[in-house]
Structure formats: structure tokens, C-alpha cells
Amino acid sequence: MSQIFHRSTNTMSRATIFGAVFVVAALGWMAMEIQRSPYVTYAGVRKPQPVPFSHQHHVSGLGIDCRYCHTSVETSSFAGIPPTKTCMNCHSQIWTNAQLLEPVRASYRSGESLQWTRVNQLPDFVFFNHSIHINKGVGCNTCHGPVDQMPLMYQQESLQMEWCLDCHRAPAKNLRPRDQVFNMRYQQPTSTNPVIVDGQTFMDQMSLGSALVKKYGVRSVGDITSCNTCHR
Amino acid sequence: MPWLRQISVASSSVGCPILARSLGKSGIPRRSHAWGFLATGILLATIALSSACRIDMHVQPRQNPLSRSDFFADQRSERPPVEGTVARGQLHDDTYFYSGKNGSTPGDYMPFPVTKEVLERGRERYNIYCAPCHSRVGDGNGFIPSRGFSRKPPSFHDQRLQKAALGYFYDVMTNGFGIMPDYASQISAQDRWKIVAYIRALQLSQNATRADVPAGQTVPSLAPQFRGQPGSGATLPVVDSASASHSEENR
Image 1: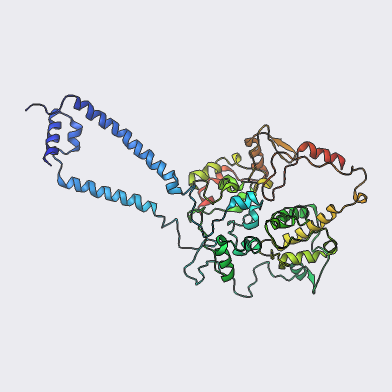
Image 2 (image 1 turned 120 degrees about the vertical axis):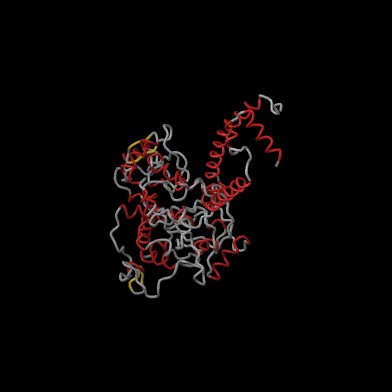
């Protein structure tokens, strides 16, 4: 019986087995990428809402502070979704006939809640607290992104644990003075645009951050990366 | 599958031990192996799919703030407290503090001493909640009314409001007035009083005369220089350190 396959088949079969290592590695890499992708995290996804509320218009266009609507963000774990009455503070006067706002007026008339779709959603086993982050100098847009440029709200970051830990392991790289937390146009200090805190001028983020870690009494990295800081 | 059998026999005959091993000692894949692969595949797919369903720990059977509840008719998990409930520290027994009135007349004194911190907090809260309509200087030319309000808010610097009692401002914030809604749910009682103090400070500063200027200070004082872009919302612009020190010298 003569050989069916040419001798080169040996090399090919070895190359195939060797290549399988890369195929398996590529599959692993793909799985990791998919796990981090918006397909899983919903980052950047504009979810449907009962009213297409524009943060861009209300923040950039009208100059309304975050806290006008999200009243409990400084004192509570929950930032607070405004009740319909907060909308009607202005919209009882402005755009009173707009069809777009009919769900808001209907909710105000009937007393039924507007059912917004939650955008930044954490799993129930994570106990996130807004007030502690605000009071230690984490800016709104550090986590929520450029909300003042979002015509429709979306989640900026992955909100995955590695993303939380990225900052918890080195909080100094994101802290800013408390009075700038709600400033959507805040920029980290540079040599041309220094930030002044208590009369001291800071030219770079790391020196400002470490000074603020001390000033605001941010707990040690060991403390804030401990499991039970977030998972209680 | 005769062709598969042929290949495996052939490959084992040319002496590729790894391939031969993977196909079983006889070099002929048995039917049961194929089913095993299929079963493993289905199991893996099920694990992969079920891990995407966030059921067990991700969505726990508990209520989060403002979450939807199918238990109550109005679908709200937030329940109003039983009527007459007094939360700890919220027995509003200090009627002046919570109404701004003595009997039915608004009082003209602050329920707590006004310090620099009180005024700074008042300024911050005023800029968040009041400035959109009343403007940062309190002249009633805020941006929101210009978008189509039927009436502009009054200026704090007209005769009537300059003479108004402190408790009157508190009462308007608490209960609303005209087309202005109440802000009792958005601003705490403590903060409303601090805003009252800041409104009075605005009235003083916007209507100061030459006689009010302390001796030695130039009039008009130099306008502060701001650095970079103004902040968004109620964030005050950053005063340039050079001009800040300049105005310190003038003081």
C-alpha cells in the first residue's frame, strides 16, 4: 500500500498542533475582550427612556448644577432621581405644550411615577456610596464621564471591579478640590494651568492628589481595597 | 464515515503518534466519543449563557432606592411613613426654625448666628437652587425665566423685598409664592436659613453706598481676574491668585 499523503503532511500536522496553542490563546483573549466590551457592560449604550432627557441641554445649555436635581448626592449613598415635581418647577412654565414632555405632565397630574431606565447599574452585592466619593474629592465626571455633553444619558465606564480598583489602588490620580467636584469643566493641574489649594500651587495631578489624600483623610490603600469596603 | 477511518488509519500508519493517540488506540473514533464531545459542548454553552443571566447575586430579592416593586399597587418600593411618624431628630418643635414665622407674621431674625461659613454655604446653595431664576446677584434676570416664563422673578433689590423680613424669604422657599414652587424637598431647613442670610448679604452688597466702604479701600474695587474657563453649574470661577492677592492688599 503506497503512501496516501505526501511527506509534507507531517510538517503540516505539527504546525497545526503548534498553531492550536495560538488559537486557544486567541479564544481566551476574545473571551476577555467580550467580557469587557459594551456588549456585556452596556458602556456607551443609550437606553430607551420615557422622556429623551438631555443632560447636555440642562447642564451645558442652561447651567443647572447637578445638585439641583440630584439633591441627595452629597449626603446619601444614592444620588437621587428627581421627582416629577422637580421637572415641573420649570416645565410648568416652559415648553408647557411640548408633546415630548407629555409623560412628565401626565405623571404630575396622576401622581404616578415616571419609570426611568436605570443607566449606571451596579450589581446588588456592591455597596457603592456617592456621598463618600463626593466628600473625598472625586469629581462627578471622573466616573460618569462628560455628562454635560451627553444628549442622551449613557454609562461612560465599564463599572467593572477592575475599573473600581484602578482608582482605589491609587486614589491620588483622580482627586480634585471639593469645590470643583461638580464642575464638569474641571481640568487636572498642568504647569500652564495650576490648581491652588489653601494657597499652595500644584502643577501636576500626583502632587495635588497626594496632598488631597492627606487633607481629606482618605483611608489607606489597604483599607479601601479591602473586600468588605464594597462587598458587605 | 469511512473517509475519516481511512485518514486516521493512514495517519497512524505514517507514524504521527500524537494524532493517533487523540483518536483512540484503535485509531477509529467511537460513536460514544462524539456524543461526549457534544454533551461537553452543550454543558459549556449552558455555563457561558447562564453566567450572562444576572440573577442570583446581581439582582437580589431586595429593594434598592426608587426601585420598582410589584408588591404595592403604585409599583413604588419607597413607602411613605405612617401618618404622624416623627423621625429621630425631626420633631419640628422649633416652629420659628421650620416656618420662619411667629404666629402668622414672619420674624426678622436668624434662628442661629450668622458666621462666614454660614454665608459661604448659603452662597453655594443659592447658586445651585436659586440662581437659575433669580440670577447670581439676585436681580431676577436668571437664565431660566428668559426661556419663556410668563413672569420674571422680582429683584431682591427692589423696595418691597429689601424691607421684607428674613422669615418671609424662608416662608417663600418653604411654601412657594406665585409661580415659584416650594423648595422644601430640595433644600434642608438649615440650608434655607443659610440662603436667607446670603440673600440679605446680596441685598447689602448690591446696594452698598460709598459710605459703606471701609476706610482705605479703593472704590470701585478692582474686578477679580478669573483663570481659565468658568466652572459649570454652581461652581464659582477660579480667581487668579495674582488678582486675589491684589484685592487682599486693598482690604
